[in-house]
Image 1 (cartoon, rainbow, N blue to C red):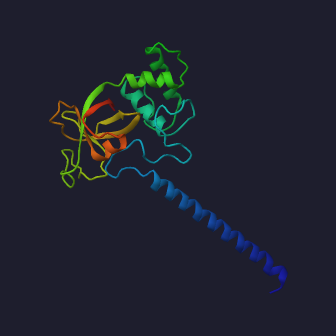
Image 2: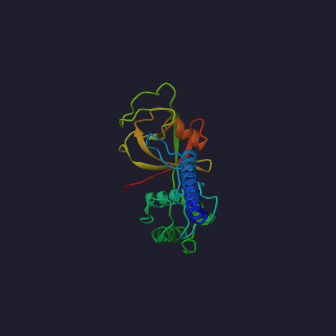
Image 3: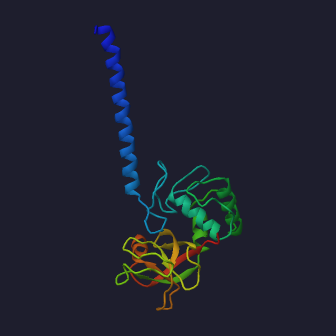
Amino acid sequence: MDEATSCPRAASQNRARIRSLIAAGALALSAVVASAHGSDSSGGTGGGTSTTFGCPDAELGQRILKLGDCGTDVKTLNWILSAKDFGRPPLAETFEDATAAAVEALQISAALAPDGVADAETTAALVNSMPLQVATWYGPGFFGNETACGKVLTRRTRGVAHRKLPCGTRVVVRYGGHYVLTRVIDRGPFSNQAKWDLTQATAERLGFTYTDEVRVAKLRR
């Protein structure tokens, strides 16, 4: 085979190898991102969960949010806005027109300028709309048992227990500036005059170590 024939073929093979390596690298990066932000296998969602590539895993209140933004803080914003009946934003991590409309409704109710931007003052008004309620936490001694909602409780299980709310009810829990978006998975609590019982994984995510007040918003859909 002469050089004129072999060189184009070799160049083509090299390009194919490069494309293969790039594709493999992209898959590896995706796996690392998914692992770093992996969601709870037991049904919990929220702070610390996986995000769309390029969308930050941030706590609500760390930055100003506006149309076109995305991230876990936007998802938290959407959940609370929906829970407090300020509109019908998507229960997702994208700041869409419906999110802006809901933010404006919140701002009007709080006597703020309705610009549809979730700045520090707007976020504070939203947080204050979430009632303070006493919570406890549980886990050790119950791991391996089935919850009242049919889930096997493990150290990684995120969720909350409530005496009456239907299993699967979505809630946002806030404590110490941290948020968890999760669901009712069990019944309780039955002590300390508490209204909520957090699983150990939920409590750890919030930095919650004893009986205390948390802010909660529960979704109706």
